[in-house]
Length: 214
Image (cartoon, rainbow, N blue to C red; front, side, top):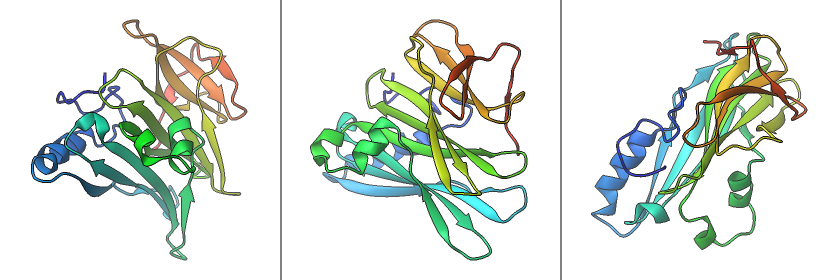
């Protein structure tokens, strides 16, 4: 459940959104003013060849009641040689609603935050954790966003044809370079590892392991 209790990430991910910053900022700001906006930039994630960095610019729209706040983000990839930045736009549900012609009131209480997790071993792809949920509820899950450096194509992936309440991005597949892994669970049950390939097909990940390249 996404509540105000002190935790480092709402889903216990190894690649956390800045949840402690969210709670601390809300506690400091909400008691002083009626509303405010605060920004947070994640650390740069450099490609293996040192030519690109990826980071997320997180926007926190604050009101006194936490369940009416909104947390959103924009992930950027920057070419260090030219200085040009490329926004990475996920096709996950809340992220898509956030850029459409929808009333601000309808976006209250939502979280849609992307966190760069790992470049691929050769640096040709970037893996992003896209966390989406509703504040003060148990509605929360991950999507994987893969940005392809060669053609700037963006893929948004999640397990399908499964019954689950939460999917937590685990990393690249160790066995296949066109798959990402998720730990999938129904609330209260142990998670099971599944793979999703770049065509969006969910597959068994028996014998596979998640991989992150530093």
